[in-house]
Length: 76
Image (cartoon, rainbow, N blue to C red; front, side, top):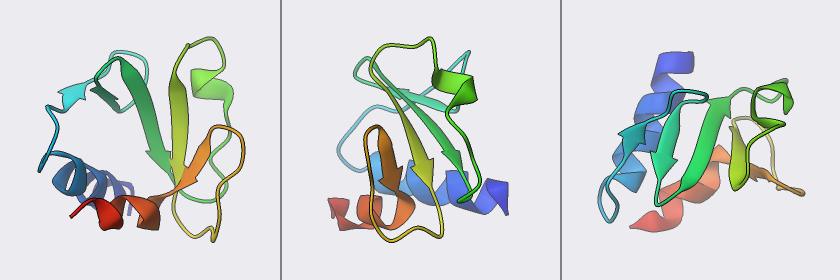
């Protein structure tokens, strides 16, 4: 399931951005780091990073630096 989430995120973001692999999370886009996961994904992996967001599947709305995965489908 994790691969499907990451593939969706990548496919949505690559249309208008250069997407790079991150050493500390999943992706880097214009100096912003993204970690993609399910609704139980915590902020531990990005806690020491600036400009970092957790992209969660199976949530309806975002808060602080957590963004729902479905929102990236609006990129088109």
